[in-house]
Length: 262
Image (tube, rainbow, N blue to C red; front, side):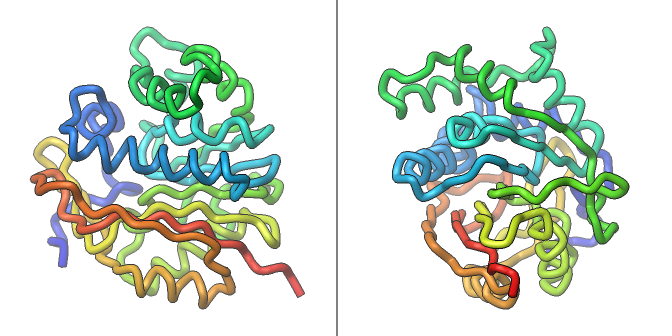
């Protein structure tokens, strides 16, 4: 079990720029790039090109100031809303949105996406298209029943969540409660696109360790089923090699459909 001294992503100071530099940059270790960049991009790309992911609107509730996965699915959606649990992540995303001189360079991930698209949009064109579809960047609060209170967002067709539930949940019971709050933003029949780090207890940022809730595939499947979701697709990636940055064993990607209201 993670030490109680471990920091928490949504309540403690979080260095969003360091998070990007360590886990998502061109200089990130190749094994971690496979986990954090290539695998999720490949899974979303396959799901988009196969027609598995559909809809007009997407809400992204993911850990950190990530935009590379939104580039992967931007062709599908007309409107995208980004929700973050801390101000630093919002600032970092807005730097990219405004093409600020100090914004993070995502060109290496965008290049990978354009290669998968085999001659589709060029890097700058693809990023500008995504920027035009981002309608809201908002702070949310998991302690509230409506996490975007006082704003009531329209329900979305899809919801993307990347390793955030493990980072904001103290135990498995809280994981289920937090999942319920997040998926309340989905329309009945909408799709949850969920990336989860399995069997992880921490990730490192500089001298600080941040807590992750340890959960396995059986638990993730069961908590989705308990809330009425039907799993339409699941895939796994084994950790390519040992790293001091985190202690996960696998990453899983699940597409699950929210039940229709009776």
